[in-house]
Amino acid sequence: MSSETSGASSSKFLWAGRVTSAIPVIALLASGLMKLSNSAQVVEGFASFGYPQKLLLPIGLTEILCTIVYLIPRTSVLGAVLLTGYLGGATATHVRISEAFIPPVILGIMVWGGLYFRDSRLRALLPLRG
Image (cartoon, rainbow, N blue to C red; front, top):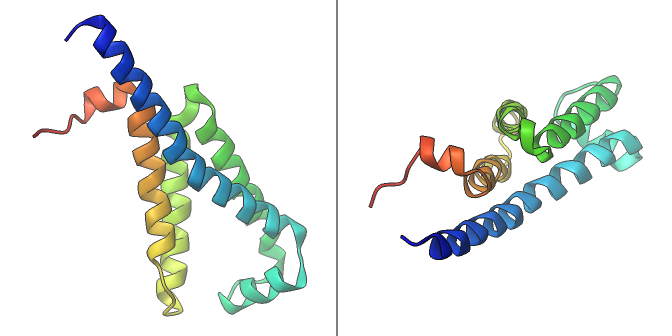
């Protein structure tokens, strides 16, 4: 493959990764900020999960901080691992109350998919075979 073709392909992967990563980043930041807002609707929804209101702040901050770590290129893999744990907890919470658990699973897939497209080292480590 010529370097010109490789460069165009690399650019396409980078932009695909940015777009794929943007969706969970926006969703997670919005969710974290809503938790920090402590609005009546958020408190009510949080209570339906069986968690006390006093956990809104630490869980919201954790969500935002993990997302920020994911956004920084040098720490993006760590951020993806942290978000996987966070979203695993969200999935378990939804399963426990018999609610749809697919959204946090999809966000987790998008976190790793976006990183896969953005980071050539990760693509080299986990190559897709045809």
